[in-house]
Length: 195
Image 1 (tube, rainbow, N blue to C red):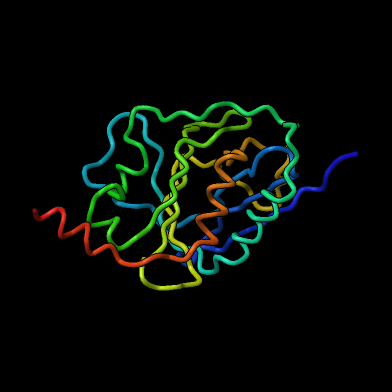
Image 2: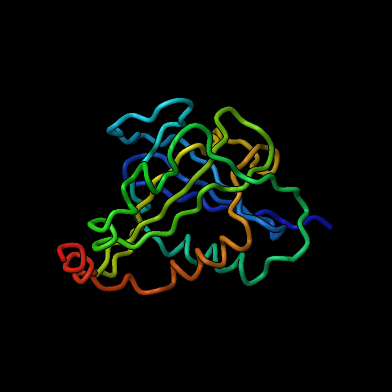
């Protein structure tokens, strides 16, 4: 018996959507649809580098519930074989966004999934996704940076297309991140850096 696929299209404030889907078969598939805000990177990446998109998913609650439902009910056996992700000829998304710097970590908490697993090939497949939350404030929104995700055409059936995949292990950590408090601003990091 086939398991129905659950789909969440998370609207992005700047335009477009990030689409998530799972059939409780070992991973959460991820696509982008019509994202409109590419990040102007300085310095520009060298070599083969997929565009980097940034923005805000304005309502985190549906994504939090979607990931939690997957983690709670996911089956251990994989119905779809996953390929290990890869990053080609460019820096990882954490470095491309400067989210590994002390000044960034003082004010934002991050969950990077880099690289993501993949199902099926597509051009430039080197999928990475980074979510961010503002420290010190409980906001309904979550920020993101995404690169290398395949485009999901309007009206397409998600089950039939190549996809980036959040593995079960990554999904467990993501569920914890989305459920945890945003945390305090880490002023002590700045003091430690000045010593």
